[in-house]
Image 1: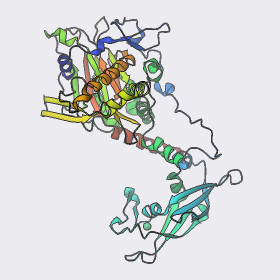
Image 2: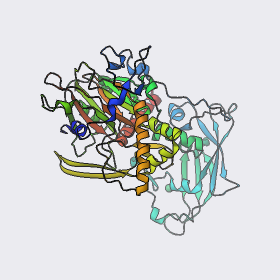
Image 3: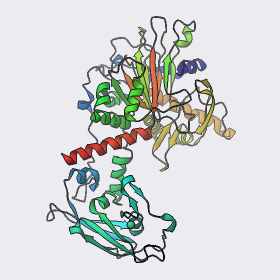
Image 4: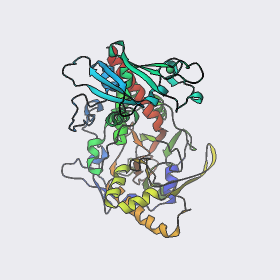
Length: 506
Ligand SMILES: [Zn+2]
C-alpha cells in the first residue's frame, strides 16, 4: 500500500496555498463559492459539511443531456440515423437512388427516403468516397464479422486502381450494391462486388453534423465545465449498491463522471476493498508504482502533529506519468472528527480554471499550455525504487489545438530541473501564479463521510485537503485506487450497446 504519500508531500511543502481557500457561506446556504482571504473555519452546521443532504437519489436528479436547440434547415431528424433511430426501429430508411457523382466520379451518391413516411419526408442525399466504400466492403473476403474487423488484404490494395463502375439500390432499397473495376491480378480480376445495408451506410455518414453527433455519442461526450458557484448544481450522489448491481446506475454514474468530472458515491461498506470492487465493475484497477490500492492514513499519535495537520495543496495525481491514471476513487473509511472542520476535501474543475485563464489572460494561457514542465517522482515503495520523469505543460491541449485534454499541477512533484530558455522562466512563474489564484477562487470545500467514495477525473479535476489535527482519537483513513479513462469509456459503450439491444428486442 502507498504509505503516507499525501502526508509526505505536505511535509515537503508545508506552506501552501490551500490555507488561502475560504468557503463563504451565503444567505441561501447553498453556495459553495470560494474566495481568497483569511482562513475561515467551517462550523459543523455549515452546509459545506454535507453538501448533498437534500439531494435525492441520482436516478431522479440526473441532469438530462443538453438538447441541441439549434435551428435546422433539414426537417429530418438532426440526430444521426445511427443508434437512436435505427436501433429503436423508429425509421425505415430506404435508398431511392444511387449513382456516381457527376461532379466527382470518385464519390458515390445515395439518396434515401423515410420508408415509413415517403410522402412527408423529403429525400436526403449522402455522399461516400468510393475508396472508403471499397476499403470497407462487408463481404466475407474483406470483413470478418465475428471479430468486427477488416481482413481485406491491404498489401495488395491498389488505391490508384480502385474504381466503382456501377452502383444501384437493391433489396427494395434496403441495401446498396457497388461493382468494382476488375483488378489486374488476384481473385478479383473479374471485378469485386460489395453490398452495404442502408443503416450501416447512414450510421457512417460523412456529413459533418453526423460525424459530430457520432463522436459525441460514441467517442467522448463533451464535458460541461463548472465554477465554484455552480458546484451544487453539478454534484450528484449515487448509491454504491445501485452502481454495483444496476447497469443503468453504473451508466449514469459514468456519464456524470464524464460530464462533470466529479461524482459522489454514497453508502459503501467500510472495508478496504470497495474501491477494487467498484473498479472491477468498470474494468480493472490502474496500477502505479505505489501499487493498486493505496491507503491515506496518518500514523496514530505521531509526534509530528504539526506535519499531519498540514493542508495538502491542490494538485492532480501522478503528473509524472505519460499515461497518467485517469480517474480517482477515494473511499472514506474514517473521517477526521476535528471540530474545526479540518480534513475537508477541496476540489475544482481544472478545465474551468484553464478556460478562465484562456479568456482573461490569453498570453499566460499560451505560456501554461506550451511550456514543458518536468514532473518527477523519486522514491521507493512496495514495487521497488522508482525515478519517474515526464515533460508536459500544466494545461495540455488536444491535437485540434483547442480542446483541453489534461491538467498537470502538483507543487511537490514539479521537478527542480526547468529546461526552458532562461528568459522564459519568470514569465512562466507569473502565469502559474495566475493559474493558482484562479484555481483557489473556483475551488469548493466539503467533507466526505465514512462510506463515501469520491470519484473524479484525474486529468480534469484538481483536488486537495484542508489541514486537520490527527490524534489517537482522530485518525482519518481513506483508501484510493485509479481507473483509466480508456476502460471507463469502453464500459460506457458496452452498456449503451446493451441498452439499445434491449430496447430493440422489447
Ligand atoms: Zn469484399
